[in-house]
Image (cartoon, rainbow, N blue to C red; front, side, top):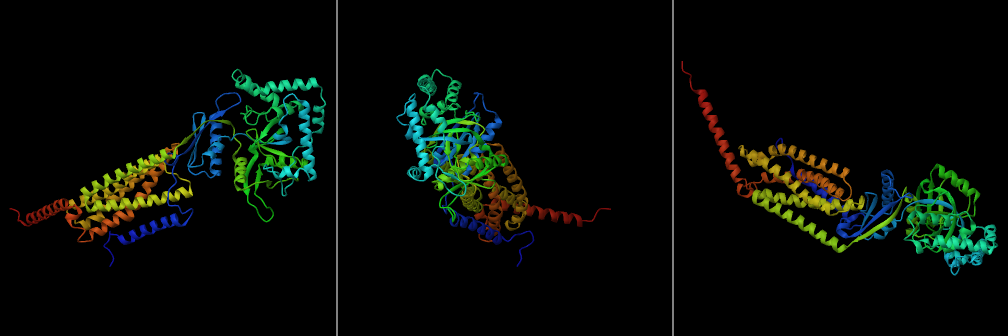
Length: 602
């Protein structure tokens, strides 16, 4: 039998809600990592917060545009590394990177990200080959160069250099096939000239280089930052081969680099490898890192037995790269990040268009890291890591316990109030809140997997406030119901009429809450976004629970003789008022009828 007009089929709505709930938890338990727990933010599970201070060559504050561009690039790199729940915000002239959980080392590496450039390798010497050479001993410098040339010769012949190559963890080849790394390009003319110079020239160059390189150690407090940069440029960016060799001997790969972010791209550069095991003499910048449009890692396949990194250049960089590789087959090119060589592969053949492949002793982690470095490494500013604070997981657990306690107290107070004031309807309110919490929890777990959403303390505050918003929707419905009963209607007939009136109010109130949460999310920064997100999500889920659970349950209760008893529903006083209203209306109707039937006087 069809229900009367204006009434609903409660079973259908409840069945729809059960299907939604089962669907959510099927995704929770049978997809992804199947871990039924939401991702927690830094203030709930601990983590690392790194502050980066922008550094410009002229010492002036960076522009807002360059800071914003740097923030976007670092944020892209954070996402590329797959760090869940991290954020990058601007704080004055600083960038603040927040990484929850156990990804603190990744955050610290992100703080080292600055300028990326491609330079041709002029000479590469292992640090071990320079040990024992003292600044000013020109003959030993020449011996170091001759040793490097000997290793190069052995590698080209495929004999004695193979042992060194096997221990080389630096990526080694560009192109379709892998070739032995060119340890040291031909510098015979320069090395020979430098080795045959007079003792006075060598001694003069040695003293000049020693004074410039040791300036930070001896007179660091007396020299300004600009003076230290200028001294480093004169030594390490000199075009003089003698000064370059002197820079190789005196350069300390473990010391802070004053040229970091300040090197002149139009001049050569003497620098270290990222692992600190090699020193390089590099030519001026060939292609800036901004010309790399994309980079990704590729696993081993049928045609290659190792991980590789694939590069795509923009149009200008692609043309420069094609010309360079066609003219420099067998040479090395260095990918220089923050004046450190992160990769120095050799060119196997000319590369015209298409994808450039870097091969070497990669595993999955190193290939992914290099790909993300090349893709997101070019920044308009250089940064110093000013602070790196770690939030203890113990403090996070205490914060989580405090938030759960606050939410539990709020929920208990709402439940007690509803039971005392609404009785059975209050019990339905508590059941609706429990089901709403189940939906919210499942959605949180899925959002943590799909979009990397993490629950933090402001987010917990949003959920606690949402308890009041959800309960408010129930109260609006119940008060409308009591108004209908006061007017003399029965519990059963009052439900559809009160729902029609309360529905508009609930939709309007939730629409205002959702718009406020949306505006706050768009305009806010940092953790306030978490509060706005959870508040907006709870508002949407509130509508689902009210429409698919609360209203159908009240409708079912109104159709049951047992559940609709006044003593159980707490509507006895209201129903007595309704009976008096009905009696007054009936009495008024009888009086009006009698008045209409009395004959009028002539």
